[in-house]
Structure formats: structure tokens, C-alpha cells
Image 1 (tube, rainbow, N blue to C red):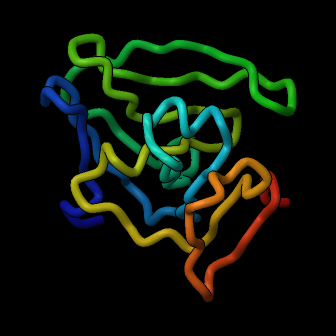
Image 2 (image 1 turned 45 degrees about the vertical axis):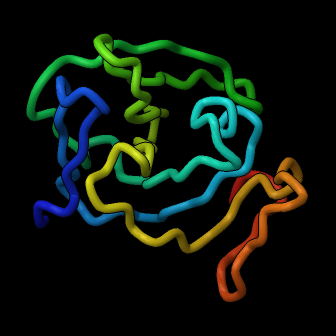
Length: 132
């Protein structure tokens, strides 16, 4: 995997790299991703649970419930507060903004809660909620 799969927090205290090619890259329009990113959507780069390694620093974790009732571990930098990734049982969802080079999203999810002025490009998958 090349250096373009590296990333970190805003202050540089935490650095990590993906060790595998991402399975999927989503633009997520759910209200949780919007709040977490302070933006119109979040970018989620999906890798297997063992597809990432921390190279510097130690993130803190906050756990929250998901819409399905599962629990999600949310990693962030204890120095600057940047959200870095979410860990579920089967995968890690790396926050696209934490990567040095963000891969192009191939799908938009949770369109049921999309802001009305966001335009979805032609040619990408669309999901009303979570992909099946």
C-alpha cells in the first residue's frame, strides 16, 4: 500500500496508515456523520478490522449506539479532538478528512437525511439508508 493511504489528526499527534485497499468509500448523509464532521456529510473509507495500523500516538475512544442498536467505537485525538475512525465488529470506517489523500466516493448513503441542497453526482450508487 502506498503512502497515499496515510493519515492523521489535525495537530499531527496521531498518524496511521491503511494496510489494505479500501473495500468501499461512502459519502454518508446521516445526521450523526453530519454532526461529527460539522459539514453536509461525512466521508467513510471502509477497511477490514485489521486493515489499519497506528504509527504514532494513541487515540481515545468514545462509544455510542447506532441506528441499528449496535455500539460503535469512535476514535479521536485526545490533543486536538479530530475524529479519526469508527470501529464496528467487522470493519473500520476511517474518516475521509483524516486521510492525506481522500479516495473518490463511489456511493452516497443515508440519503433519507440528506440536506436538500446537496447534489449527488450521476453514476454513483445511492442508498436511502445503510447499504445492504
